[in-house]
Structures are given as structure tokens and as C-alpha cells.
Image 1 (cartoon, rainbow, N blue to C red):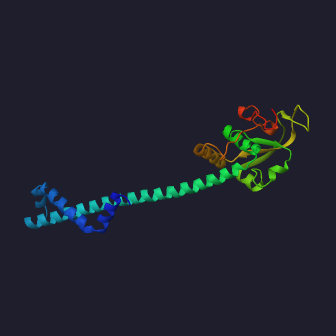
Image 2 (image 1 turned 120 degrees about the vertical axis):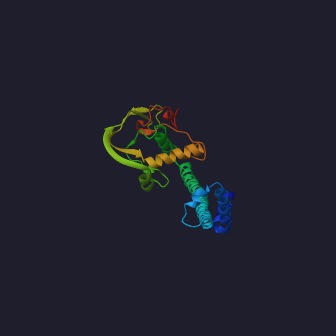
Image 3 (image 1 turned 120 degrees about the horizontal axis):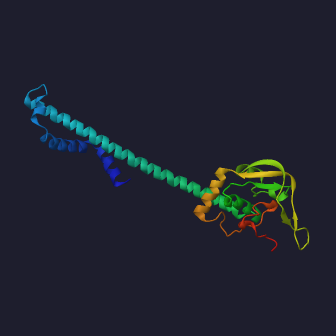
Length: 233
């Protein structure tokens, strides 16, 4: 409790202090009130002065009490808001740490996919052709429960941009395209904001250094962050 709040609490709980202050202020104020004001009251002069002084005292007391009450409530609310903010910050910090631990265990490919949305300011979808078993393992962003939490997903029939693929033991990659039904992933805005908050506060999605690599199906092929292949120079 702040000093000002303590003073307000004492004044509200011990009305005699406010009464004394009201009396002192009323004495000072009454000195500057012309006698003709008192003369307008319907009593004799002495009673008029007494009634006027009592009225001034009550008015001053009510004003002081109201002002002190406002100060007390304001400081109590500020303290309550501060405590609530601390609780919310602690909860958010815990959520951030949980996500960072999850991101620590993501494959380089899936980490790069998330960074694709961050780097493009969530203005581009990620498109995927074909079926990958490893996408559906626990701890993947494409595992069903996690996928529903992170993405909006639609489907479209189209051909992918050209992209390089290494086949078997071949030294040189082949430029191919994928054509058919593609899954289109759009990052949900609330999750995108979570990624931005983690990066802004922690500097990285992960606890340890991570790199972005070339993505499949030509996603981000025009972006410098996705030019390096993890497996081939």
C-alpha cells in the first residue's frame, strides 16, 4: 500500500481527523464570508452565524471525504491492476516458454516453414503437394491437433512452381513441378502474433540458434532466407 493510500485509508477509517480538518478549514473560510450573507438566514444574528458555520463545516467535510475516497479508490485500482498485470505477464512468460520448447524440437524444415510466415508477414500461404508420413508425427506443426490450432487449411488443384529435387544417389538435382491437389496453409492471425511476440521479446522462436533452409514445392524460392539447402551445396 502506497503512502498516499495509507493516509487516505486512515482518514476514511478515522472520521475525527476529517472532522477536525473540516473545522479548521471552516474557521478559515468563515472569516472571509461577509456578514450580510449570514444576515439572509431567518434567525437572529448569533444563530445565523452558528447555522452558517455548521453548514460550511458539513460541506467541507463532505468535499474532503469525497476527495479522499476518490484518491483511495484510485490507488486501490492501480494496485489491483498492477497485481493483475504481474499475474498475466507471468502466465504469458510460461506460455512463451512452452512454445519455445516446442519449437526447439521442430525439424529444420518445419522451423523454416514457420519462419516463412514470419518473413512474409503472414501475407503468403504455404502450399504442399503429396503426402509425407513424418508430417503427422507427434511434435509436428502438421500433427492434427496442432495443425488445427496453427493453420487454416484449404485445397486447390494447380501446378507448383519449379523446384530442385535430388533423386537417390544422383549428384545433380532435377528441376520438377508437382501438379494436382495442393493443400494450402494459412497461418492463423493469433498464432502469427504469438510468433512475433516471442521474436520481439526473446529474439528467436527457439532457445538455440536455428537456420532457415530451402522449402519444398518452390515456397519462398524468391526470398533470400530460403536459398540454402540443408543437404546439398
